[in-house]
Structures are given as structure tokens and as C-alpha cells.
Length: 242
Image (tube, rainbow, N blue to C red; front, top):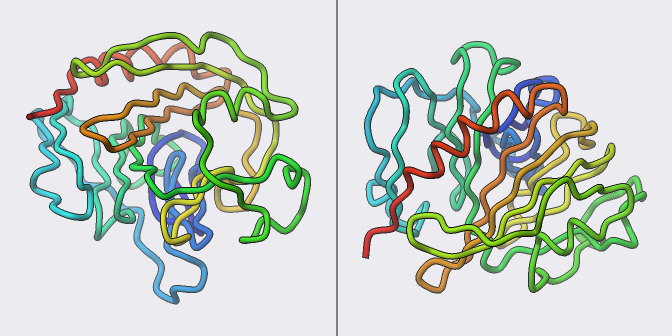
């Protein structure tokens, strides 16, 4: 999940990374996320052990303003806003609560008002606000076009909770964060070091009730194929009430 961002899930390995997201101010995903570097008080990445049941985002109020229900398998972990991860993000993880290096699973981000890394700045060492550009019509197409990214599958149509969207699987090179959430308080990607290692990633983008949702699962290429089926099964349980 992340140290300079605000916590988010995603991947094993990620403590080292601590996951895969950093905030521009930052977010911790596993991707990971963490609190903005300028915020002063870091957000803990410690997840909660969930009993088998349904996570209903109605309980999160404005911190995740999209009605969504998802089945959380017994023993999986949750990182929920606003106390564990930043607003507009949440993570559902598999692994040992006390061992971030074992965490992997999907992250969910509300990306209205977000921005992305200017592709021209991809190799820059300073990934600050000057490197940002407006959110693209499709993040999947944006990502697929970045130098060094290889498309494994897609983009292809997908239906999640009765909502039609698109999905893509890619491999990415060592790279900086590519997403800043609204108000520049959280960036997604970059891990603890500010730079992601090479990953394999599955993204789903949906528009639900007029709100854009980006779902991400990333992992080391050696682990991705063995885990992505469990992630897909979890996504298959999603419902969008109303």
C-alpha cells in the first residue's frame, strides 16, 4: 500500500513498496496510498480483518460517495476511508494483517476530478504538480499508450454489477505515479520509494450513476496469474444499489 500517499491495497510486495501508491500528497494502495506529503500526519495502513460478509459503502458516507456492495471472503482484509485510507479510495486485501508484504487484492478509486501524469514527464525525477495533465477520456487507453507498457489483454467490454465498462491487463515498466485524485491530496502509484517496480496490472473503468470508478489489481508478474482469478470472483459479487 503506500507511504507517501494514503493507504490502498494491492499488492504483495508492497511494503517494500509499501504498496503501490503514493500521494502527491499521497494515497496508500496496493497499490497503496498514503497521506499527502505536506499533510504532516501520515495515515496508517493497518487493515481490519473482515468476517465473511458484505461490505456496503453506504456506511462510509461522503468518504466514498458511491453506493456499492461487495462480498468480502472470510479472512480477507479491508482498508476503508477516511481513517485508514484517503477519501474516495478503498482496498480489499488478502494476507496477514501484520505483514504488508503479504497483501494483495483490488483497490477502488473514485476518479472524478482526478488528473494524470503528463506522458512527456514519465522519465522525469520530479513528479510534482507541474507534471500533471487533465484526466483522459479513458485511463485504459492513456495507460496502454505510455512508453514501456505492454498490453496483455484488452481493452475489452466487461460488466460489473450490471454496469458496462472496459477492462485491460497490462505489464508496466519501472515507473512513477500516474494518478492524482481530486484536490491533489492523493497519488496512486509509486510505492514507498516514489517509483513502482515492474508490475502486471488489471484495470476496470466504469461510470456508475454519473460517477467514474477505477478498479485496480496489480501484482508481481510471477504472482499475477495465480491470484487474478480470486480478484475477478470478488469483483463478480459487486452490486450497485439503485
